[in-house]
Image 1: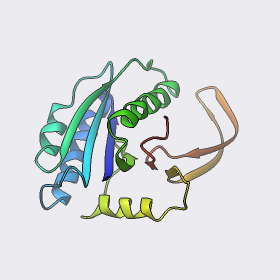
Image 2 (image 1 turned 135 degrees about the vertical axis):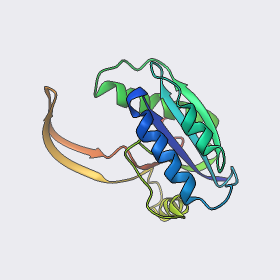
Image 3 (image 1 turned 30 degrees about the vertical axis):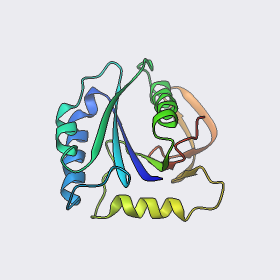
Length: 166
């Protein structure tokens, strides 16, 4: 069984940050990674440019696929949530053999070599039956006119069961 899939979603405005993240990930990795240990899925929102540079940087050390997520709309928060769900429908079909998938938004940044191995160990150490490992945020907030009375929210940058949607 494969270990960890790194899912890197983006839209056009994220390209500079995602490209810098790709460079950081590559610099932290001393050698080529076996695809069964860690693979990367770049996920482009349907109306965005393709981040060719990030792909070219990452392919030196990782198995990388570029996938375009179908129409998600373009308004927050629906567009981001819909992109997540559509992406994990795809992940469940193509990457279901991975232990876990890390949703790595462009503002995430690993800090040391061995970061994806550490995430994988965290996943293996979870309680049986747990499908998401991440940071739980409890908050009361108003977002762009959308009132949230009581919200328990997992920060999107988390580890997920690749079959969470299926």
